[in-house]
Length: 150
Image (cartoon, rainbow, N blue to C red; front, top):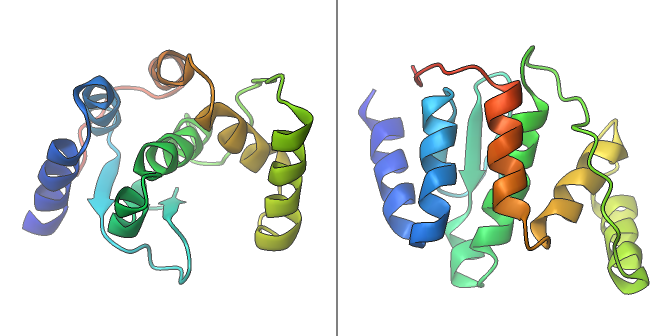
């Protein structure tokens, strides 16, 4: 299939150098990255554990939230390992009350379809951490076996 490989190449060239290790780690662990509108309307990003595909909308990149969107969806990828079912990683972030309220608002108003809000809180919480990339790379390496994307 040429399309996922093309999408991966475009996605890798889209990100700054500091995110290249994450893009490569996801690929090495069998995840597909697509820089295109997710199949769910009005979303900036999406992760599908059945196909191990992460979507990042080009609009999120244009709006300046592409990094946060990629980090968020990559958290869900890590949460899906090793058995394909999303389970919490166990991160507990100390967040300001303003950020906590905003996350709660987003979860209440935009994520009713998610069965486990703990998963979303973990993903939202990681996005703004200064150590986000290191935490995420560590989680992927510990939870997800090496396996090339098919």
